[in-house]
Amino acid sequence: MSTLTQSPAWLALQTHQSVMSQIHLSDLFQQDNQRFNKYSLLFNDVLLDYSKQPVNDETIGLLLKLSQQQDLENWIKQLFQGEKINNTEHRAALHCALRGQDSLIIDGKDVAPEIESVLSQMTQFTESVRNGSLTGYSGKPFSDIINIGIGGSDLGPLMVTEALKPYCTANLTMHFVSNIDGAHLSETLKKVNPETTLFIIASKTFTSQETITNANSAKAWFLSSGGTEDTIADHFVAVSTNTEAVKKFGIPTKNLFLFWDWVGGRYSLWSAIGLPIALAIGMDNFNAFLTGAREMDQHFSTAPHEQNLPVILGMIGIWQINFFGATAHTILPYDQSLHSFPAYLQQLEMESNGKSVTRSGEMIDYSTSPVIYGEPGTNGQHAFYQLLHQGTQTISADFLAACQSHHPIGDHHNWLLANFFAQTEAMMTGKGENNKQTNKLDTFATAEAEQSALPPHKIVPGNKATTSILFKKLDPKTLGTLIALYEHKVFVQSVIWDINPFDQWGVELGKQLAGEIARELEHDALVTSHDSSTNGLINYFKTNR
Ligand code: G6Q
Image (cartoon, rainbow, N blue to C red):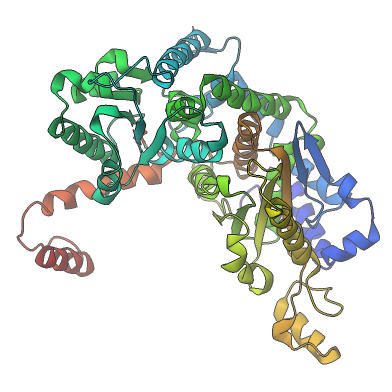
């Protein structure tokens, strides 16, 4: 048994859970008509409603005792002071510094001027691409930007560029190529003209197999369709920490946007990895995006924990995962422009907190990151919500939506939001006669069926916990605030679980694995060096390719 699960705060929460699990969520609302006022928080334009969670004052008190016991306040300080809290890689995790900090000394050096200098390089570059003064080799302005990157060098910029499409004012079409599957690059190249296409090769290490393979193929395509070695510099820029590799690839250093090893891949969209975002929405909007995140940083580092959005969101997650046994968490943006938000959060949460040893290397005996998945509403309603309403798994959910639409046609937005509210209400109250008292569908349904005309399969038990996040409008600043909210929520949970959220050794393993097999695939001789399944699969591929 770990010290955490034997600690007083943990044991007190376990005892409290056995009481709270007996109370149906709708009863909590009947007992207290002030629940919404008590259990919702507002920061800037972002409203966080956690009143449809199985909590009361005692729950919040006990959760905050747990966070105190795990020294959350001190960890937050260390994060913002640039301590080397990424202990397995001996680095600070300084993504917050990218959102604007007057000065921050790391290893005896102030990093603020370097950040400022890359930001002004980005400003100059994005302005000249957007106003057409920087052109391709034939003198025509750029029409298409292709970002080649993967993981943290792809998911963030892709998600934000999609989410902020209404702010993409320049005449530029953004494309994102990540998969090493040749289809991704080929299908993208079919849509563009080499004379007016700008490639951004985005890779922190500049060694990721997928990115380098795609970048080499893009360069070959460029050279075979009108470009020359001399004009590569007009059409290729790089974002990386690896100056040498960028030079070796053929991109001159003047086209390199630097960032630093203290920016983790999945936290890098605030750095020059955000170049496609800045090209799409312009630097003023990009700065507003940074401001939104900075304001959330200030809130996270100063607000009392009971009024602190990331702390509350994180601790509600702990309550669900470690005490109610939730194994999955679903992200449901009622906003088509946030269609990539669940995929982005999959990486942020699962790569950060999908760990099973503590900071000091001990095996963990409690759950850490749940499986994260999601789809925009209302699409998900017609697909997997069935399981949320009547399935046997414990799954928690975040619903998100904007009050104001960027596309106010007819009554679409009212219908969209009506679905949001109806779903969260139905998940809480259920449907059927006297549908309450238990969250176990089978027991409940049988008892209910005996007393009512409803057959068990028609009874929806409710008592499913949800959190709602409403914001005024999805603008650059609000999106910055929202992303930082989730980043800090992930950090809060990592502190409770005593894990390092900033490394990713499982991902590193994946990067090494394919190399040896790729060499075996270079020839047609059958292989015998693996287990029989892997040999069989490789040999079937070789005989059928
Ligand atoms: C993120 C991960 C991972 C990384 C990609 C791309 O935190 O480390 O997703 O971003 O593997 O790495 P490069 O940017 O080095 O190509």
